[in-house]
Length: 222
Length: 129
Image (tube, rainbow over all chains, first blue to last red; front, side, top):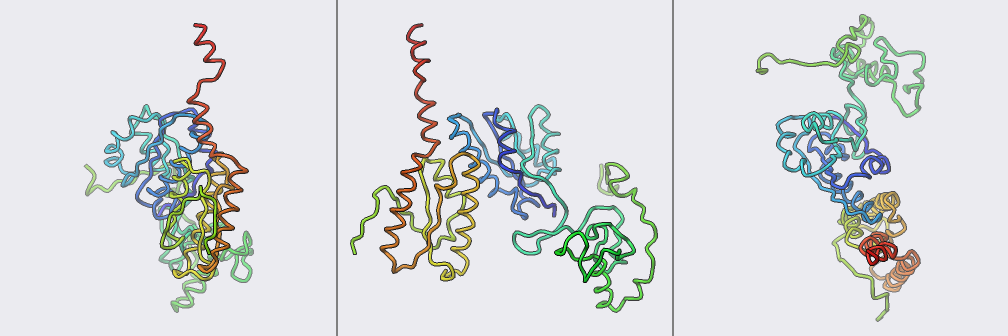
């Protein structure tokens, strides 16, 4: 899922303070699962904003809505009746959802209420960890299912580097060395000899370095 | 024991403090409450194991948010006691009541009253016109 962090409330208040009809829009997908942008968090943010305006003696309306998916035009278009009566939308979906809302409602300011961080999963409730950087050319088959691109600080493809100590990365004692994990898992798989195979230089043009990406699936695209 | 506690404390019974959501706390302030406190079982004695710990975390979250919006985080508190500690229940009610009396009314009510009543200068101008 896409993992995000809530923006500081002061930052959101600073952006919306001059508006009087504010819509807080959440998303039922990734940001709901990472407990930052679902209907629950919409309620909390909207309530906090209402209290802010009440405390200032300002008569402002703060509406709440949660779309099934903000990254899908059909749901974004479907929210028109809820969006249009307002004069600003605070989107607490990921950056994709926020942009889809902005693209659809071209005369409506749409601002983010979260900082979108990474693609990852939950280690336990309340703790998420990065697992993918969307490099566009997956190497997991040769790295025992552990991604050196997202989990190694240097994205080293033939690791570990000299900064690996007792299984930890030099950037943090709490961070596992991805290559230690890869070697350990190759051992458990009985494939340690694969470690000797050098990975070729990676083609980064499929990564963000090749510019913004578009994927077309010919079978379904009209 | 027929213990007394301040009359302006309104009790809402819940099966466990773990049932209390941060939205319940925030909405209470939106509706004009001057303070909210949760009274849960002693830590480590929750029938549902984690209920009062979850409640404490929610109270702390509410405190941070209320501080940021200008309501004041001290208006929300969490207390723990056992079901046999009626005097402590009354004591916590008095403590909370005194705390809120010292803080004054919910700022939203004050701001609402101020914006509803025209300022003296404005009234005078209207009168002159």
